[in-house]
Image (cartoon, rainbow, N blue to C red; front, side, top):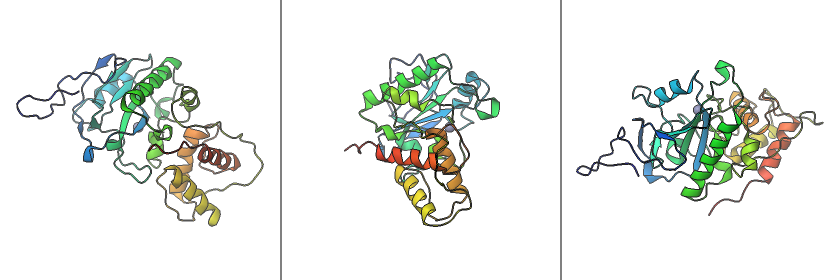
Length: 270
Ligand SMILES: [Zn+2]
């Protein structure tokens, strides 16, 4: 529990707090947080990469009052886990986002920043021990907080497809899935026969694609036109679920992978 002043009850964000989990190696408090709106209990985990040249630089930014950004956790390349914001607080990591009709993703989620310089700086592979730490952390969160539906463990790019690429197509969602974290299916092969849809296309098939992506949670309008927002959502889908080719084209492989994902979707938690 975060500490509160005994006299005023006011939260003092910079005061040290007890980590939410014993797997946290260090607490580095960030002032960049506020109350979850309407006491919304978090039922989503949002994964990011830091996109900066070093983890230390990222940690400085996430705890700098001027930056107005934060995350609950930062996971370093060696697997070290730092907590910056107590889980009960609303960290500022999602920005302008949407999922399953909800727009205040910060209020409904726990944010994990995974140290990786990202596409801008060469985008190296995620070390296995870093991924192992992410898996342990996600398991710790879902165990302590009660079930989080696997299909609500998401990429930043899933909830902000027009703006974000992280954690990107190198993030091993399949490995997480093998450990019981997240909803994932093996992607259909690239060289499938069959027609797909591409930017510029119009018609009922495009509307159906948009409706299907929307039913999974993506913030996409049913315009019947394979417009720029649709291309961005298909690209985000590929970064998460069909990582072999990221081009925003809903080819036969992408469509089949999407269908398999919908068919294996876990039943909603009651
Ligand atoms: Zn992000």
